[in-house]
Length: 126
Image 1: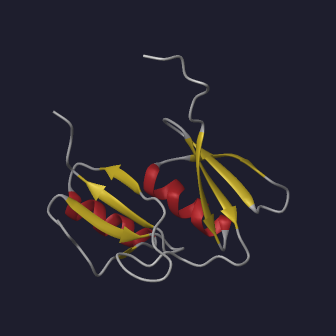
Image 2: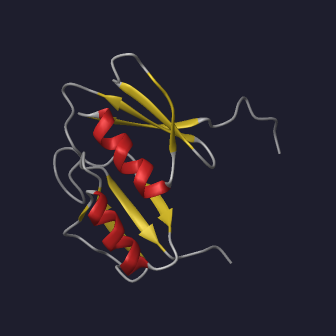
């Protein structure tokens, strides 16, 4: 193994409203606000692992998945115990289920309040 140049400290998502998305992901993942810029255009959430940073972009265009002019650039996979109950909890926080569900028993595709796809999954490495 080669020596790494650095360590992953944060995953950043563009969005139209950093406060809205920070509230959503804090509830979904149990994260706490680590810091925010004075105008709240950038909010970083921390908990286990890398931070999740939400960054306001005034000309934000949500991804359209699985097709469309603005494809997803990345997505989060969230490990859960029960896909059905986790889906209900995520929807209660503001997520919506994606119309396309390629493998709904293993991976439930949802959209966060800014339109980013993410998956809830009970699949675990063996």
